[in-house]
Image 1 (cartoon, rainbow, N blue to C red):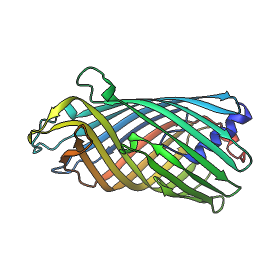
Image 2 (image 1 turned 90 degrees about the horizontal axis):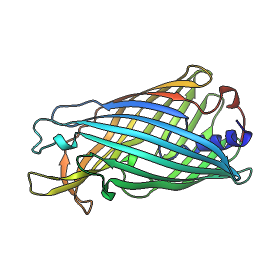
Image 3 (image 1 turned 90 degrees about the vertical axis):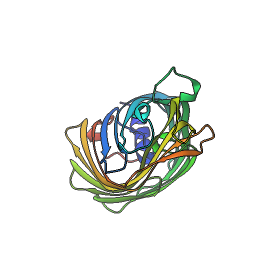
Length: 293
């Protein structure tokens, strides 16, 4: 792997934007525990990324598939069978470049298809994610800022990205900002922990419009949640890693929307425990990770 690709992927790791994975392969499973009179949500996904050297930077083609399975309470006054599963297919094209010894940027364009696939595919099932983030870095700290649009967080509009990260010593570092804040602790070369607050959610089309008991029409589904928890990462070998998440929702909100994105039905959610597991194939060999930008 060329040094330019190694450096550029370091930049992408430092940006950590869009909740996208920087590994070549990432398989993830997670679930919010179901409580009485509330909806439970499980998520499974697979992400594949392919980097190539392009011009003065690196181009990354990414492809991902996610599925959200919802378990509604039997007392919901609606026919929920058509919105028990939502699926998202996402293609992303990222370009990153180091501008000089202190600045870098990444730009991402990402068309997606997100739907319950109850009828034929239309343009209503298609959305567009993307964004632009700049990074100013030195030996010990980084400042990242920009604007992103990411329906995988449950947002249906552009949101600001702002993050300041700093290494305290060889074991401790932190990232402060929005949408993700975390404190990192390195146990040893093979094991790491972080405490985090981050968003989880989805935004999807209801391909066959749903007639509700209140005679209103639902055309979109939106779920937003913020989770705080602990992530444990174990390095299996030079390429493979496994991570475990345990957390708790600080907030959660699930709404069905009309054509104007106004809520026509709020479905009961209750804050609950989140658990998840990731299997990762790292793009970089372990031996390259001590290289500085």
